[in-house]
Amino acid sequence: GNSVTQMEGPVTLSEEAFLTINCTYTATGYPSLFWYVQYPGEGLQLLLKATKADDKGSNKGFEATYRKETTSFHLEKGSVQVSDSAVYFCALTPYSSASKIIFGSGTRLSIRP
Amino acid sequence: DVKVTQSSRYLVKRTGEKVFLECVQDMDHENMFWYRQDPGLGLRLIYFSYDVKMKEKGDIPEGYSVSREKKERFSLILESASTNQTSMYLCASIAAGIFDNQETQYFGPGTRLLVL
Image 1 (tube, helix red, strand yellow):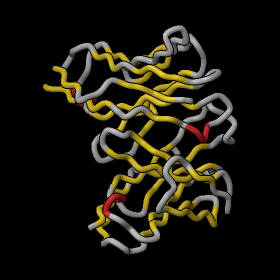
Image 2 (image 1 turned 180 degrees about the vertical axis):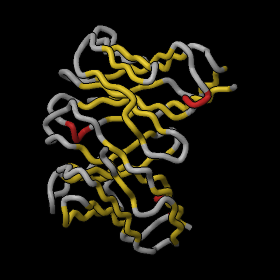
Image 3 (image 1 turned 180 degrees about the horizontal axis):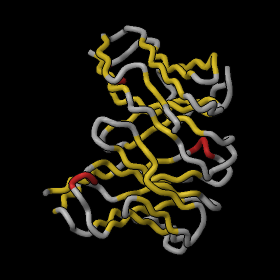
Image 4 (image 1 turned 90 degrees about the horizontal axis):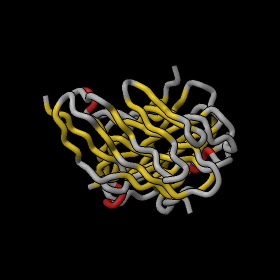
């Protein structure tokens, strides 16, 4: 079946540190991959996405590359800010089925000034 | 900008009460979804709807029902609330048909429900 596994949190970093949040997936065919972010007190919003192998999604300094050979979609940022503190969800939608978006369990990120 | 709104940010209800959670989107999206979010479990799909009056069960439909009488509105109903339904409820909508996996889901701000 389809599933998403992401690293457990919470993750606490100092401002300007390098961030990696690991995400691996299991899926048949060619899923699309997403990172969503949830800021405190808000709903989820799309951070970035990649729809085919070797695509790189990027937004707000965050990047993730769709790696089919390792079934991974790790989220990275070179220099985090306090405002990046949030919960990050990795997700996939299986090929030909946008209704079946599957989320990871979320990783809480806290950035210290 | 797509806007998905939910009728309440916080609700407190008693066990056995009937609870209505309302969601409205303003972008003429065909597909709408209800999730619940619990610590350590991520988001779990309760129900979704791909058209007016159409509904499909998600992964955890037990104890819930839904209503979609108008395209822009999707309601989640707890027929008889129980304490294990205390959770954050998130509504979402998406523009594309359900057979396109490249589109983005747009989420409302969530309703935090406490059942006493």
